Length: 441
Image (tube, rainbow, N blue to C red):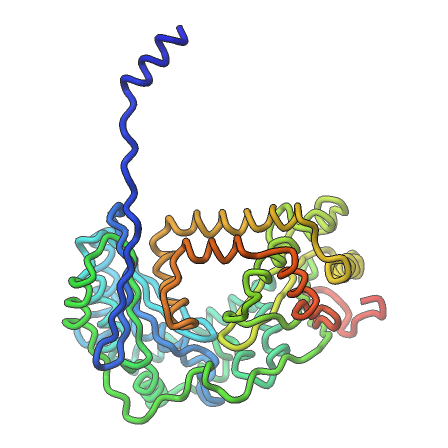
C-alpha cells in the first residue's frame, strides 16, 4: 500500500514554479518627483501609491489637523471626477482606493490588477494634483471629521495614545493629534486649505512607490502622463530631518477620568530614531518585552497573574526621535498592581539583560514576520517609500534579514545599557479613577 501511494504521489507531482527575485528601479524626474518600483512578476496585482512628505508635524499653529483634513477633502471632488466617480473608477475593476495621514507624511494607495495600473495612477494623480476644494464639500466634510474626532474620543484604547503624545511631545508638532481639534476643524476656511495644499503637494515633496506585476518604463510613462503637481509659489518648509531643534520628550504622570469599565494605561519613555544603528536591537527588545503571547509582559501580567486581557509594547520611530510605549487595560482596582508589574519587568530587563536563548527566539520571530510580510505587495510598496524617505536608498528584504541576523548579545546589551531609558517613564491613565493618582501609582 505504501509503495503504491509513493508511486501515485510521484506520478502526480507537479514541479514547483520558480519564484522570480523582485527587481528594484528608481528614477528622479527633472521636477523632483521620485519614482520607485519593485517588480514581482509572479503577482497578478499591483500596489500603487503616491506619498506626500508632509504630515501633522509640518503644520503651523493655525493649521492643526489640516494634513488629515486635506487628505479627506481630495476624495470629495476633483476637476474631472465626482466623489462617486473617484470610488467607482477603482471599484468597477475590482480594485480599492485608500489614504492615510501620519505625523510625518500622507499616502494615497490603490490595489488593483496589473492591467489597471494606468487607471490607478490616473485616479491617485487626480486626487493629489487636481482637487476642487468646493465650499459645499468643505462644509460637509467638516461634519465628517468632527464625527471622527468624537468617535475617537469614545474609543479610549485608541485616544489614550493621542493624549499621551500631546503630553510627551508637548513642545513639538509631533504631539499634535492627527485629526486636529473640534475648534481647529470648525474654524478652517478654504483659503487656508488651498494654501496648505499648494505649499505641501509640490513635486519635490512627492514620491511614487509601486510594487507588483509591473514594468518600470510603463510606470514612468503613466506618471509623466497623469501626475502633474502645481509648482510651489514659495519654498517648502524644511523636512523634519533638516530641523535644527529636536523634539524634547516631557516627563509626566497624569490621570484622565472617563466613564469606563476598564482603566487604560500607557507608559512610555524615549527610545531611538528610525536611522539609529541600534534600531533592530530595539525591535528585538520590544518583541521580547511585549510583542506577542511569548513576551515577558504577556506571560507575567496576563498568563501568570490574569490581570489583563490586552497588554503590549510598541516601538515608534520617527526621522529624528523615537519612543517605546506599553499599553495595558485592567479593572480600576488592579491598576496599581499592573503598573507595578510592568515597572518590575522593565527594571529586570535593564539590570539583567537577556539570555542567548531569548535572543535567538525573538530574532527568529522578527525575521519570520518580515519574510512573511514580504509576500504582501502592499507591504513592499510601503517599505520602498519609507526606506527612501529615511535612508535615501533601497533596502531589500535580504539586506534587512542580514541586519537582523547580525544582532548579537553584545549589541543588544549595548542598546539596553545606553538607549533603554526606562528610569523615569511617563504615564497616562484613562478611566473611572480619581483625578489625582494615589501614592502607589
